Image (cartoon, rainbow, N blue to C red; front, side):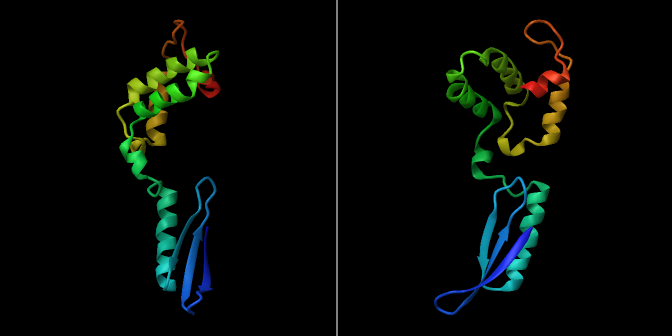
Length: 137
């Protein structure tokens, strides 16, 4: 939801500050001299956030899922020696399937499609992977 505050600077100029706060997303703010510009930005930005177009940052356009998985294995799993073997198995599968994708190009629909391929396939012990197993990960 967007809110617009009218503020007066020390020089006496009017500035309209827009705040957009939507659950699950970081707040966005911007300042404008004209109220119409503030309203237009608020409407455009809110729509972009809801459609998933707003937060494709430069970092997400530079890194692939494979790089992210490798970094996670080095920085997180290397400090958890007890429960990592199973996680590494699944991460290896995700890296093989979607590792070449940029983080900005990953969508929920794409992840769900590939998760469907994972369900029913065999795990490292030769047993079928059940949907409940993916929730436990």
